[in-house]
Length: 405
Ligand code: ADP
Image 1: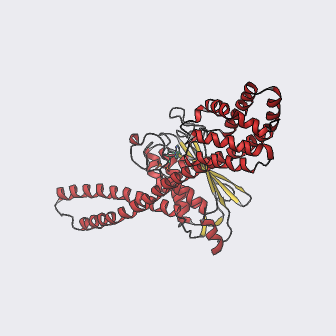
Image 2: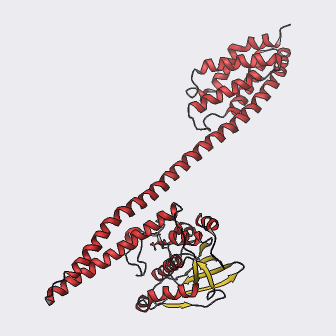
């Protein structure tokens, strides 16, 4: 009577031939394919009589590594499928080539080996997939970080490079103003030029300042100067800034008093002015002539909620997060006319990220509510700002904490 090992050995040539056909799709993916099949056969043969599966575990690990080393995507070789195919082909070969008694004896001996191998292969398969996914995630994260770094580097380099020539132009403009000709017509011409240069440099100065602010926020360098402030006074000063433009654009602007708006709280007055100035400038920019803008709010436990609402073109819900990212301006960049308060006059897309940075540095939050973008129906937008109602300036440690967003 032959042993199961001897019976299995007898099937070797047929086994190699049949398994090679059934695993044909792996030829080319696995180096030295025939040698590889021979090793599988030997490993099965070794584990079968002893029931010791250590050998097969080691082999499965080794083969999985072949795929990892070849940097093949995980779906190219499915080890569970490979083992199921080997098992099926083996049983078929045994049935075709052996007599009933031999076939039964061999298949019963092989069954635990295959069950173990399939189990082990599925563990390896999952590990392999996880490894690939982790690698992919890492790659994506590195790309994102590179983009983020290059944006941030670009802003700080560009801002600092622009600052020097800008200061030069501003200096020469004021020298020119003093050296103005006295003759009337030439004086008028020169004054006109100066006005042009002035408004150009002012716009450039605003952009450079915004770029510096964004890079400070990005690098956690925005430090706040906590002072007693009154929100209604801040809103009034912003309104005064825009008085002429509100009349020119026939925009109705209302500031509603609310619980807490006339109370003294601690905050950085200049920075909060800048934040609400940005929100109201946007409300003006994205509301057609004749529309209305309002500032309202309410008091909540420990917080004040301020809402800047407009009857403008609105913002698509999918864009509600994007607009708070730097350069997150929407629409076709080339269609934007430039101008700080013209209808749809675009900017560089830095206003909202700065506003968000300022509010978050105060320990607050900002978000937008709008049904969508429609330049005909004008669904409007509401910017909600939550600001902690601080009754005393934060101490050094907490101010550091609040400036980390
Ligand atoms: P920008 O300099 O382009 O105004 P912001 O960061 O201030 O940059 O705003 C980003 C984008 O958010 C704008 O380009 C605009 O598309 C959209 N947006 C901001 N505020 C409003 C608003 N009140 N109504 C409609 N769209 C707005």
